[in-house]
Length: 120
Image (cartoon, rainbow, N blue to C red; front, top):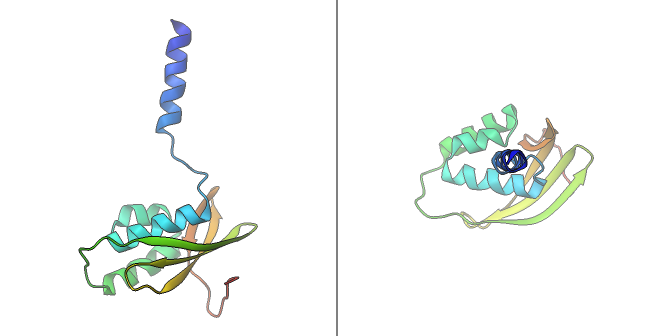
């Protein structure tokens, strides 16, 4: 009986634990989807403070849309603690690039510096 309780508790903790080992592409897709759906809590969770402030500023200038926006990841490049993800959305059909950094072992979208070029 004791083993069943211990196994149950372990399974409970595993099932309730957050997936902290997402790839840059998975993180970028979540950020893009939360950006267009205006889900600020999810957006904040997957961005650095600078990235969040920048995305919220842009988001506030966009008109509301009631259609579902599809996000497609086109490419990913990782160099140590920095990642780049190229994506496109059904919102305007144009591609974009997110810069990601590792923060507390999690990939988070951040700002690109002025004149900073990624691998794409």
